Length: 224
Image (cartoon, rainbow, N blue to C red; front, side, top):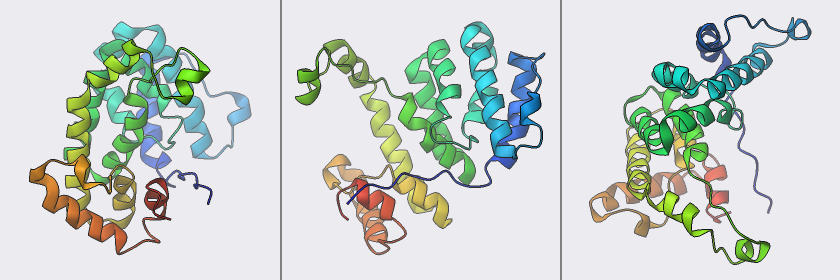
């Protein structure tokens, strides 16, 4: 069975666009929306604005560092699961993987439901990629040692993220937000420390009791 693409949540552009307008004043104050975008849906305007902000933020990393908190707030309101990387990339270049992941975890723990969803969208791009020296190494899953070391150096934050997502999932009452959070919950109890076993079992029971609602998560776990 083919794994379904995870759809973007509709309506997020409403809160996202004003944040982009604020960031444009910082990173590209002379930029204007191209004429061809006139009359386009707000979602498409946001795509153009985000691209311009990302371009400006990568070019001026000192400016990115000074406005990192505002940029991160826009990240967790982003509308697109792939386009979000345009805002994550300059933060990583300016402040590193650890700072970026710490901020994402903070939003999962303390943010609004909308911010929690955006934080989980950002997590995928906040991790150092594994690199491989050859096709055979890729096939055998033998990464370049330096890239594995970079990923392993953040293992404490990976655990913190898993803990934060589990806690947020159980505390959340909104079905849509829970659905997004579930994508980062493992059904394997060995992925969680003893102190979280009871919470994990509770979350797992909730997910398995509603297989259609959590279909995307279960597909990625090999359960459907």
